[in-house]
Image (cartoon, rainbow, N blue to C red; front, top):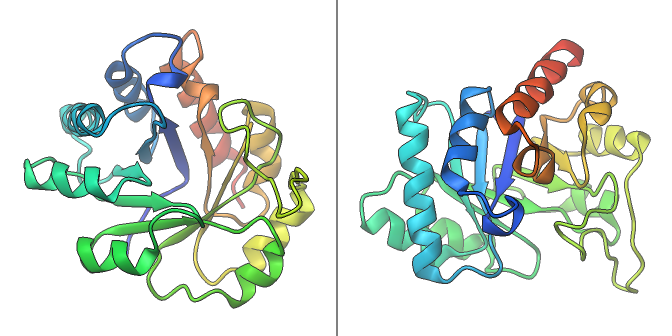
Length: 231
């Protein structure tokens, strides 16, 4: 597990979220602007397409000179991470949800130095954060702050009711969790100052960067605002 992991500015991206534009240049612009973690996520791309996209992401991160600082993860697909590594692609780990492949299997196959992130359970969230076994994971992803079209099922509890999280909720999460928490779900620039005051390790965004007319400029605004307000 990573002793040094910067998830302060976390960008989730895939081909569904770029308004038809290539993904790799958007990742490059975001990393140049100060994004510290990139997660490749697609529910429509094939395994081969995801491996190729992961390779492109790794390459553009290397071109920025930040391979040692920026963490590259793949959402859900352990097979893609393993295949990418087999091909010599520098990918740092995986992010999984509660219904995805179990974290113990991810850790077994990826080894002790990989990053394994887990989406925190929506149902009974505070009890879960307090009592969950975190020995195999590096951070929790939590939210949503708002409803979001990039992940329509985000925030659904066991009864199908959608739950969004207040700034007070997120402050409590940060206090309860023994590992870093990154929060997202419809996050925009206006949300960054209060989020930065909650004690969480970072924010994650999708469309705020990937669908922006100027992805790099928007990423820079988000990152600078976070650091300006971080307590």
